[in-house]
Image (cartoon, rainbow, N blue to C red; front, side):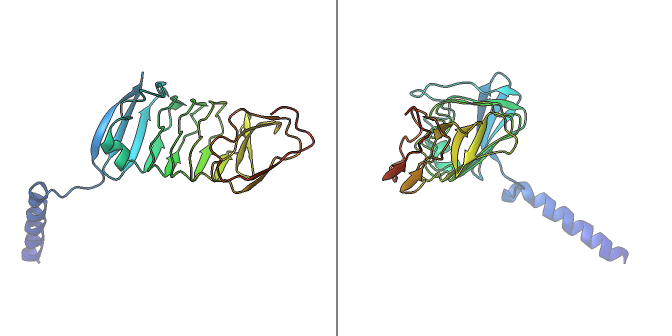
Length: 218
């Protein structure tokens, strides 16, 4: 029995000794990182997960210059999912625009604002889920997301609501954004009084819009 235990220990020791030599790793490894807010940092790992950690707001960025990762081909070619960790309160303007291979986004309840153009041109996104505490969403935050079929607002949000996958203010009187991949016919619900300026931007599939009697401003 003692010999068997000794043999097992020796085998395990030999296996562990090989790990550095063979490059065996456990979990994903970081391939790029940086700062994206006064108390916020970002990382991209080799599984394609872009993660923002820390507390408080992210920085806002310009639509032309963009964030530090905006002109990094490696990041654009590898980012598949985005995780904003709890503690982040603001998604920066144009922070993730143009990440064309991004498919999944996870936003925490700590987020209270989403900046203008934050996810613009994220072509492979199919759904956006707005957390309960979001009180401000900038113009064109989800525009030109070609595969986007649904914007879902968490139940209990006091500032926004979703109906049929489209984004409205909490009263349902203002249509704010229609997903780019929404179909060929869109019927604006009765009760809507106003359509926001960019509500139908890049909705190229739509061939017919049905207007309600309640509509006052387009």
